[in-house]
Image (cartoon, rainbow, N blue to C red; front, side):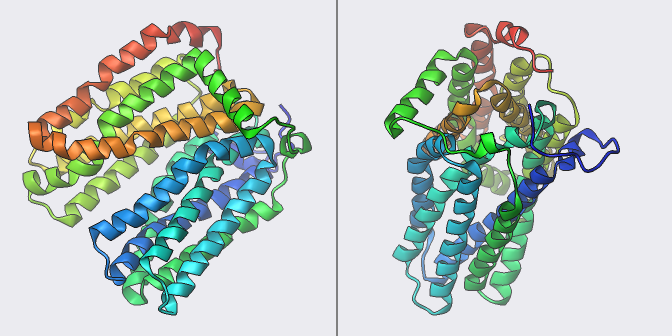
Length: 422
């Protein structure tokens, strides 16, 4: 595969750093880092802007739901667009929309004219724009790098997300909110998205990879994507397993973990923040470990087992009264899931036909999002009905037989042996 770039660093670099030999990938990575950092600013600024407007949990839920709704209703269209249009142009448009919306929110906030309904509307537009980013990014990456460097590139994303979006961005947002107010943090998010746009203006891609593609109707393109999903065993099996994994695991982590920290360890917000930080750190370490090696020969088996067995330590969360034990547990779980996600992203880019990659990436994103609200809605009532300890035991153990079923029913070991990627 021609990458359209010439390595500029002749020395042999460690495997995770090799993609940076390619100028245009380095520009894309710089853009992604700035964009994730700005998103961390944006998320925290939204929270405190709602509070400054006199809102409480219900009003914050409304704004968050607006962003999630925009993302969910647009993500499949984002995949179609990534397969029909210039992916480089899509990335630029996404950042432009984010710049404009964050700047609008900041202007309204600083002039005292921002209201909750307008903030929710802006959040909806930003969420909709987000839906076009991931499919375009996933589909353009294989055009910039050779196949054996995709694993390292996907590992970088897994490292950058917790570091920039969940640590550095929120940290700066906290400083801006405390010192100047949430309106300035919203302005900071707009500036961050502007920094993300600048590298994209100088990024080049091979002409064949960036040309607009002839297509039928949008519905026809969607049907083609769904047909590919249904007839491709390894893809269907993995997404079916992922749906159930999200349903079982996400709710307890997001809804019940704060109460486990409070009630079992006696810790406050600082203790919960520590646990979340270790979860993100684990994800970064797992991503780095996966990117530092080669693609596993039994990549489907390793990936499914990392997801299925990697959550077993969660069973300890409901029983321990030690904060450090909870932190270590979620760190291990985060590492397993982070490594699996690096393999999964690389697998899509290596085995899905290029003209379908945007749509398949959007289907993956859609599946990941679809049952998250259901999982979080069920976690509270289930935890109250059977208790937090038993709920975490179920979250830890139910994925194990699901992983075994996915591997055996769809004969994934046979499939990966017939399609080696190492």
